[in-house]
Image 1 (cartoon, helix red, strand yellow):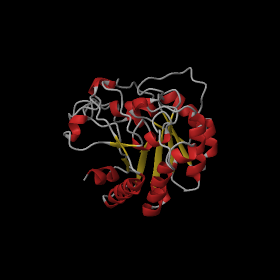
Image 2 (spheres, rainbow, N blue to C red):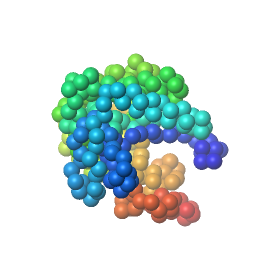
Image 3 (tube, one colour):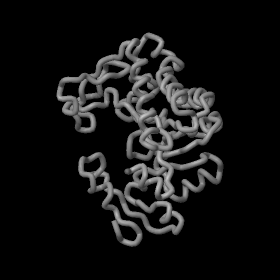
Length: 278
């Protein structure tokens, strides 16, 4: 019903699929299931005010099963009517836990070198492309971010390697978080890094995200820095964001305290449209 509603409005609808890995609340698992990761190092207790469950390091023979889980999720999304899927490989979740060298401490074919650390991510991409076609697959990355204690010692090399590697799979798009968004929600404009090397390396649709507004988003596209610009928090608070941008109308301010809550309305569907309706 949700997919049909989006399509009836003329929308293109991609389903984001991801695995949290070690970013897992203990209470979510009832203490019965141990979260998995590239490592057995857990997030610092109390980080973001959460009781994180210590992870278990995945065995090599288990990794193909996780890749297959992503494949099945993609197939299920297409059968549900979605136009495609976006692999969430950013912000400290499982795929990021393999790519980032501050987390991945393996000494096998999935750890150590840049190529090895990116192997799992690329195996997931390859499996999905074979299952549903590259024109239905996108991926989101955050090589410069250090969210959930998942930073990297050389994020520029990581981003460039992935941009080049992803090109050969013919995926629909590469969606990357700006270097200025080192921590979730905090924009740091003093960074010397840029997404331009990744943009030039990836031969496909390149989407930039992170701290954009109407003006610098338009500038990024006009100057060929990106093909598209993604908006998250602004779109959440402004359900008619494209119209507001077109009219250069005032925007609703988002309330971050309502993010990631269990209420299905407050902070999600109660922001007003320009005409005052919700």
